[in-house]
Length: 132
Image 1 (cartoon, rainbow, N blue to C red):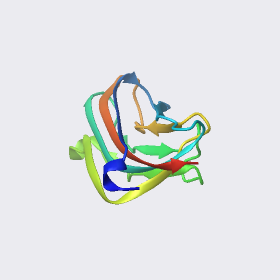
Image 2: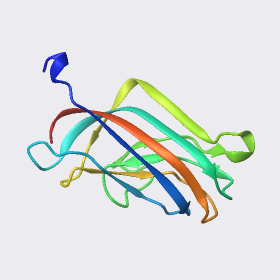
Image 3: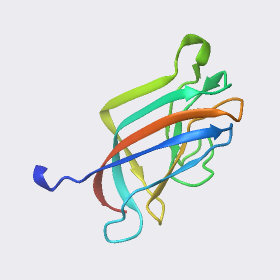
């Protein structure tokens, strides 16, 4: 694939009044149908409010993925609100390969440890590699 053939995709959205079990579906295009292999290039999250104490973002390849399991593809260390850790802005030096499920989906958890009033904005950048 030449540089001009590279396909990038951005997913963004907001969380409003979410609790500890929030899992957001990230829908990627499915060129040719079915699962796809993507490189996660960048991730950005900004918390805008809430009564949580700590948060720990995670991305998985299956709905309801197990934390620390084979389908978990990205996990941050727990971050404390008290320490002012209310955002992530990462452009990865090494891309994170992910494989979508059969419907072209990945799953994102902001990982709040408490409250049901947590708000934030998220953005992901992916590069398409090939069909799965």
